[in-house]
Image 1: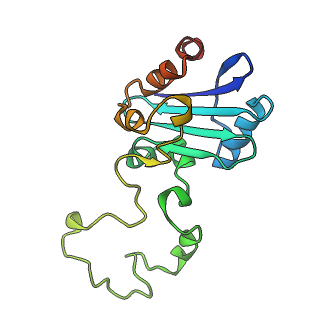
Image 2 (image 1 turned 180 degrees about the vertical axis):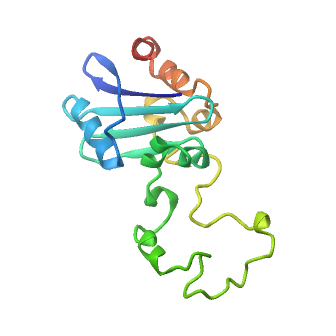
Length: 179
C-alpha cells in the first residue's frame, strides 16, 4: 500500500495535502506538482512510502533542483513510484547508458561475444552494475535544517517513518488528516 503527501511550508506553518501520483511519470512531473503546491517558492516536501518496504523524501526549494532521499533503493526500484525517484544521477549512472542497450546481444554482451566473467551457474552471477543498491541512497541531509538529523533519518524504519518525520517537523496531526 502506498501513501503520498505534499507538505508545503507557509507563513503560518505547514499545510498538508494528499497526493495522487497516478499522472506522475517522472521526477520533473513530481517537481512540477510540488511547485504548484508551493506558497511564495517556499519549501515543499513530497513524502512517499510503500508500507513496510521503503520511503522517500523529495524536497523542492523554489527553483533549485529537487533533493531526494530514498530509504531502500533496491525496494524502491521494484515500485513504479520508487522508479520516479531513482534518477540516473542519484544512482550514479550516465544518462545515456540505456541508449546502448540496443547494441547488446540478448546475453548482455556486445556483438554476441561471450562475457569473460560469466559463469555456468546463472544463480551465482553478480548483480548488474545498474541495479539499485540495497539500503539508503540520496541526500541524507535533506531534512537537517528542519530538525531531522542525518543519523535520525538513516535510523528510521519504513513502518511509520513519515509519521516520525512529521512528528519532528511538528506536523504529525496535519499529516494524519490527509492519511
